[in-house]
Amino acid sequence: MRLHGPVRPDDRSLAGLLDLLLCWAAGEVLARVLHLPLPGPVVGLVLLLAVLGVQSSRGGGGEVRSGPVADLLLRHLALLFVPAGVGVITYLSLLREQAVPVAFGLVLPLVVGVAGTGLVVDRLLRRRA
Image 1 (spheres, rainbow, N blue to C red):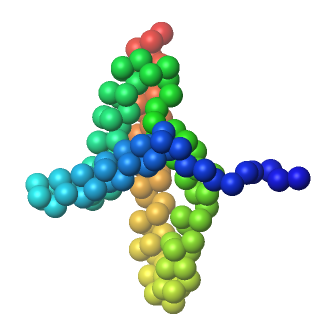
Image 2: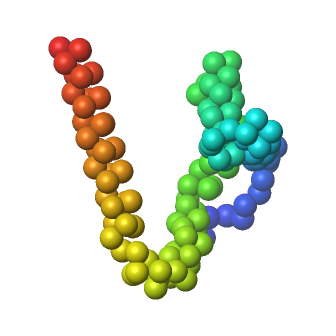
């Protein structure tokens, strides 16, 4: 018994993949040409958000073209962490030498992010009450 059939891309999947790739490429170009302080993929994500907003405002029934491709990428998200894991193992000796700065660099933003989120939620709940 097969759990998943063969992958057969249809026009909708290819259009969704094209949306993702065009947003990524446009973000890279904009970041370089405009000398933005953000990486190209981040700019591409903002563009993708705009594309999704336009698609959903046209009344497409809540379904967007990039949905099937996004689902496929999310199903295999763990594979995207393999290069990062290999990089950590490669530089493990350097990480051991710089353990204190790395720990501060990881823990401090986490604490600030959680505290900031808590403050925002607290203010929003007080405003609502």
